[in-house]
Length: 132
Image (cartoon, rainbow, N blue to C red; front, side, top):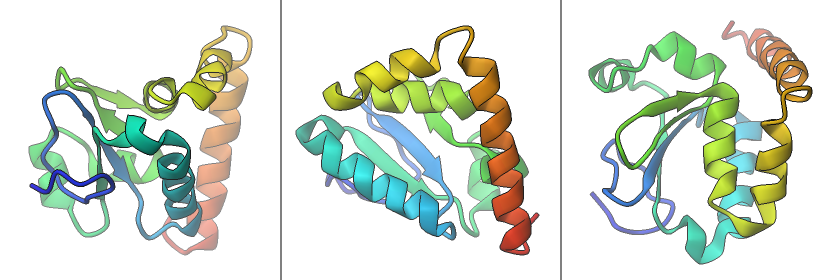
């Protein structure tokens, strides 16, 4: 596995996280680029894995490929897989400028509303792309 920031690999780092993202989604690719720009050195422990065409690898990691298409999955340094908003909170909490947003997303009144919006927007995106 490459130790470079932004590398695509299915292996995590002991001190880092692995982000399973939809590389066939232009918005997801833009989000990754923006995250890497904001993260700078704080993103060095982030390993990015494009889930496109990797169903067997995902299953071997204990991740349902269909679920990975519908929601972000992040494996933390302890090996625990976090999904949807928990994944975003973990990812953003590692980057100082994004920490306030991670906190906001986790608020009890905000979280359920944002979750519904997120799921609906992903469904619309996948339908528009002919993938859902």
